[in-house]
Length: 252
Image 1 (tube, rainbow, N blue to C red):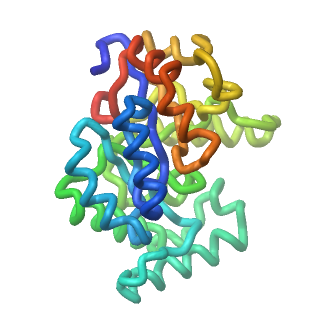
Image 2: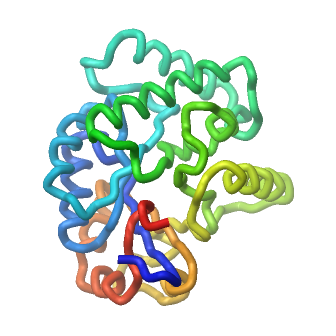
């Protein structure tokens, strides 16, 4: 469990994307290599993932919002599928919609987020521990300012190891960060596994993991990637986690 001083969350994206992805996440959790995951709704593996969750009571499970990839579950109601498909078209036509508020799609975004939120509650019998997003969908300003996510819920922060910084995106990120913290809870730091553990071999460096002794830190992992699957179950990684105050977004 997390100490009062800090918290390390190792979160796997894409729970329920398909059967193989879900099993890879379960394997790494059982090995001690991750503490949390986020579930995708209306995908080919969504129902199977929800069924498997009962066997993994110590793994935190949040909602992995999806505004950028079409639902793959063939049983999705036509109205739900059509709402998301129309929104995909709008986001794909303009990447600027991730950064600015567009009142024309306000109701569409709220409906699609609500569809996924309600399906999560239906399957898991409770709200998600937190929210993040497929391709960082949750950071779209229309999501952050929408009505479908309850105020005060924990959500994923912006990357602390963002690539290719420039003055414009730096200002946009800072503004978005203020918006996030005005409405939601989040970690102090958010890193990708590649930044925390370059090369994914040998003992992980202490530099970023040790931040979790005095701060809340999320590390994003993707066990379905062959490059990450074995390292996340390795003795070096698991022992590094055992020395730190690990937990889930429920501990924030």
